Structure formats: structure tokens, C-alpha cells
Length: 298
Image (tube, rainbow, N blue to C red; front, side, top):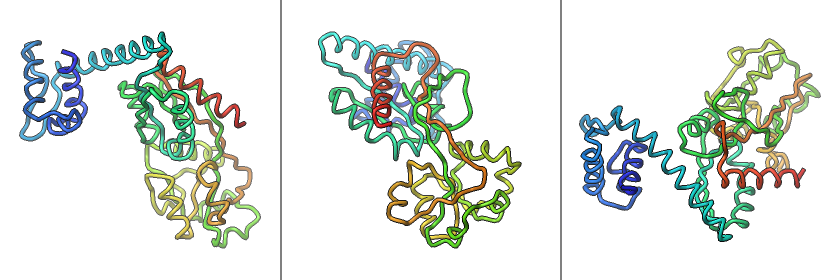
């Protein structure tokens, strides 16, 4: 029965029998057989089939919700029981927004793995909106995000302070200015992150006191990652607000330069997010580990 639920979970998440078969290393007929047996067990259809596309029925959505809860309980059992014999084992599903997953979290994961080599970590990368959605859907246990919005179902814990700075190519004529005014911002060509990005949300919030809307800025392009923005900047005369954590190498190599904007400091926190309520033992252990890492560094 447990494996049937695992098959159902894979099909429900992928909405594809073929992709579920590949993920589970079984044949597609075997996937179909397990789904058929579940439908016979509960006497209800779990998927609607429309040509090559499938979707969850109401019964399928209910079973998916319970399956997520069952797997969550199993995951906690595995970790808590292994702890009793001093062999901490388990699976931690983690999500991090783009800036964090690229520049903040890799050394944390390396340190965590050195301490707990039998704990497997799956990292989901996306923008803040996507990571919060994954947490609410119980696809991950912990997220680390940036942004100003707060969802009532999520607990936000301050993790690490960050600053967004205005950056341009070191050969840009703007570097000769001692200071950039708020009015100057309206004449510059900007690169911005995509909608749903926590960085974009923070910039919008920070410009409000100056009565500057994003729609008033000349946005040349919206790109899906900080890396693509940095690469574009190096090859253009655009500017962009970027996390100070993301440009250490480019500043050192004198590829990018920070521009000082009059009376504008954009500070924010990266947040550890978990669902409201009790946090499981493995998640608590991971949060304690990453918090102590940055406390030691600071």
C-alpha cells in the first residue's frame, strides 16, 4: 500500500504516468496498475484523462493531501528513531529563493553534510513566491527567502541581514558621479528581476518614500536570475539593484561598481520560513546549524 501511495504521489506531482515511471525506475504499465489498484481500493477515480493530459479529480486531490501528511509522518519517524541509536538519518526537503541558493546556502549545506552525512537534502530553487507556495503545499519543510510580504500560514524567522546596492559596469560614465540623486534614477536604464521575486518586492517597497514607482523607471529588461543580470550589466550601460552578497567576486575583479544613491539604503533580512505550528526534529536541527554558522561568521 505504501508503494502505491508513492506511485500516486509521483503521478499527482508530475501529472504524467511516463515521468512518474522514470522517477520511480519502474515501467509505465506498472504505474498504471498501481493507480488502478488504488482506484479499485477506494472505489473512486483519482485522475481525469483527456487525451495525453491528466488531472486530479476531487478524490485525487483529497488523497494527495493525506498522502503528503502520511509521508511527513514517516519522515519524522525515520529521523526520530535513528536518533535513538545515534545514527541521524532522514530526508530534508529545503527550498531557497534564487539569490540565497546561489550565494548563501552552498557553504551551509556543505557544513551540514559534514556533520550529518546520512541526512539527505533536496534543494528546490525558485523565487520567493514559488518557495512559499511549495511550503504551503508541503513539498518542502523549510524555506529561506527574501521579501516584504507575509503569509499568515507561514512563520518567518529573521536569518541574515542583507543590503541591496545599485550597481553598474565599472566602465560606465556613472561611476564618475560622487552621488546619484533620486531624479537620476528615472533617467537610468534598469535591469530587474521577474515578478514574484523577493528582490523586486523589496526594491518597490524601498522606493515608496521617494514617491518613485517601478513603472516610472526605464526597465530595459526583466531577467530570471542575479547571474544573468550581472552578465548583462558587464556588457551594457544598464544599472541594477543587487544583493551585496552576490557581487563580491565582481567587485574584487573590478568588473562592477557600486553607485551611491542619495538618502537611499535598502536593507532587508533573509527569512527562514516554516509552516505555523510544531517544527519536526530534523528541521529544527538544520535551522540551529545554519543559524550558528552565520552567528560565528558575524
